[in-house]
Image (cartoon, rainbow, N blue to C red; front, side, top):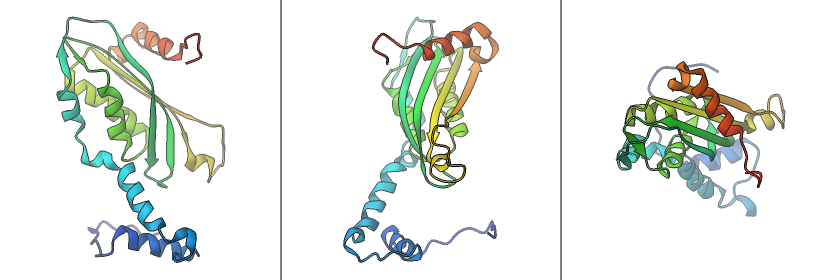
Length: 200
């Protein structure tokens, strides 16, 4: 396919109109009973799945930072994550584990899953998502270090291409002490591997 660097001029067609055309181009009838409202549903769905573009991750954290004398590791693990890969616009999903070593400031715990969601609700690649989460926390509170690990399964691998249903991808971003200090990094990795007696 020919690549172009010229700016794209948007047509006046709505997303619903474009989806009707897509249905025709793949050989479907957009007027048949099961598809009549599909363009409308896809429009709403895509706006929901990409709502992260309308949210400011830095502002989310600024509204929930607290001065605390605490210098032990803070971990929020097993954060559910759902995103769309930017290459095929197919879902990838999994768990995000986030840790940081405070240096005078901490983040409200509920804001870390919110931060994950903001970046995940954009067209993404897993590698970029991992670094965006880590770098945003690092910039917001300047901790001694940040560690982020994402384990995810990609439908673009499971449904098409190599069609490997049981494969998963693991990415990590280690900043500060998590990169420079072996013991800190190993403590984080051991804690996210640990499960309680209920299996969670």
